[in-house]
Image (cartoon, helix red, strand yellow):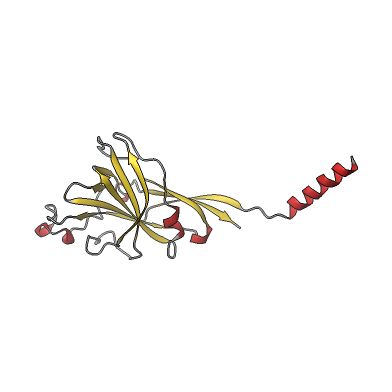
Length: 191
């Protein structure tokens, strides 16, 4: 009996000296977003049909499409925590609009270029980086949470941007300007 009591006391003392890191959740909305049209044939909705002259940063919806002219949605975030504190992070897009076809959604980290929602276009947008997530968007549904941890961990001064492209078909969702921003869910590990 004394042996068991000694073991229990040892384990309790050991556990008391171990520092346990706590996780906490941080939720933050996108700070800017825009649709970037691109096409080798030209963009009819743009001045002089030139995709370089279009800035779609103040629209109520964002579009991603493979149908020419193609479109990519660009969404910028500012994390209120340091990137070394990030354990994981996911992004949640607002509800989809008129998505009656199954679409493939490609998420990539944008290059480290600053951009402005009111003026960004295909010529001034950040580079399209490595795909970090690929998910299927079923017809007449919304997307669940998408893991974007690599982008959060690579943030510079808390800033990073993501591209949402279509691998197939087209999808459209509400933008920050509609009052429905994309939401970043961060799990941190406080040490």
